[in-house]
Image (tube, rainbow, N blue to C red):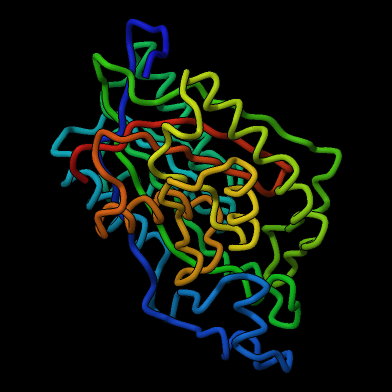
Length: 316
């Protein structure tokens, strides 16, 4: 991948942690008189994972982060956390950083479902600038705390979980130029007040149309800026918002030969955590071969979006 730079970064490893609680499609649809088939056809979800009593999203985040660090085998000198479901009044990012890399500097990004991609672009820029050598990114979401159980549009979709990645210096750049943007004029399409519980709202049909119209162009531009074409992409990992969106975008991009992430089938929509969780799953299953190219695309609340082409780590 020719990125026209003398300094670069690359992904070194992934990690993930999932809650113990499992809700099947049948259980998700039952309060609304909807069948498991109805839920799966409209979302692609067969089950979601959610935190049970006694479980902590911070503990999951630390577990995911430590796994990524152990697999990378490097010392971390910066931690970036990504989340849109942070508990008000608690510096959750600092606690996570302390659990993974004590005394490392840390800051948190809230770009909602684009959070991991934004964090990856930031880590890449800091490494290129010589401000860091090895950056740990931890994306962790406790989305279930934001749901109204009576809202069909959100309560059957979102799950909890944490995903992580380590990014390090590389003579041969492995993180392509980021393509990112936002449309704050339509931010009300996904709205949430983090100071209260149970008030997340989403205009599902409008979000679906926006994503299918917007994401393919963002993804194609990321390929162009990285100097590759869709046929060069071995793995396509969009934000796991809805399986119908994922499939529609893949079709528009003509990604007939790429492995397409479908982690939403067994995790639900985990916002910022969805991309690293999917990468961890695909790596464990042997569907993300080291040295090959992956296209990552985040999109969602904001309305923010981002995309970049990356080289997959040789081992993770």
